[in-house]
Amino acid sequence: MAAVPSSSAVPSSSAVPSSSGVPRCSVIIPTYNRAGLLRRTLDSLLGQSLSPEDFEVLVVDDGSSDTTAELVQGYRDRLNLHYLFQPDEGWRVAQARNLGIAHASGEVCVFIDSGVLLHSDCLQAHLQTHRQAGGPVAVCGYVYGFDCDRAEAEQLARTFDFDDVDGCIALIRDAGRWADSREPFYAKHGDDLDRLPAPWVFYWTCNASAPLELVRSVGGFDEQFRSWGGEDIDLGYRLFLAGARLVLNRSASSVHYPHAKDSVELWTQARDNYRYMATKYDTPIGQLLRWFGGALNCYNINDLIAARGLPGCREYLRQQQTAAALGSASGSGASGA
Image (cartoon, rainbow, N blue to C red; front, side):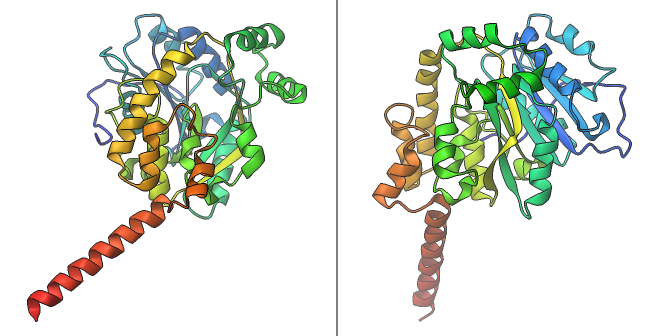
């Protein structure tokens, strides 16, 4: 796994300074040929209740050939914004996020996707969770309208005014439709995910946060992921092993702007990535990822783990370390006898 890089990319920064010189959070947005969606995301950041000097925005361009660079230029006098560019060498979202992490200076990283529109209190809610946690946490934000099929996405686009993000989210919530696709799981298990054996399967970086130094200490995103899916839960797994408690904050809300995507093709790519994770993490729970993405998925894997009585990943690794230590001590005793 590649560590967070020291990039050769040349960043361009905003003219908006921080009063303290250090922002409270760094918003990292990877993008590729999605200038229209990125514009909506940046507009939602302009409306944050968090003071502009308290957050920075790092847009990491994975080699776009559209008007992304020009678009970002137009926000430089309104946001504390850094634009980072890497050449188009295929799907490199993990490397793009690492580039943002390498240049980030906030205490907390907030990961956002292009086309995710943040409620005005979203960044405040992320920071409040970290401030009140009493220890490291990896926070899952709430994403309305995520993973809609094509017909639902088209209806969502026709029904709501996405220029008014807060109003849009309120109407969607009141309508009782287009909830975060993880909502049935949250309703069943509650918002404190850490009591589950594999809470990291829901650490989706379309709207999520974690302490910057903890993200760096676990190596950032694994750059071996070169197709869609899995690089975010892989980071969630390592944050979890490093002691971060995974929690949901519904107030860190957002809406996923409807746009076309080929879900079948994306999940086909993701299955290869899950098998890679199973090979990388040789634990009883890790091995289940070989079958992840079909009948076994993020919604039922924790039930299967409980039904089989599998040890949690933290517990299993502690057992392995204890056994190794005892074996080493036994060998030393025998050699000294």
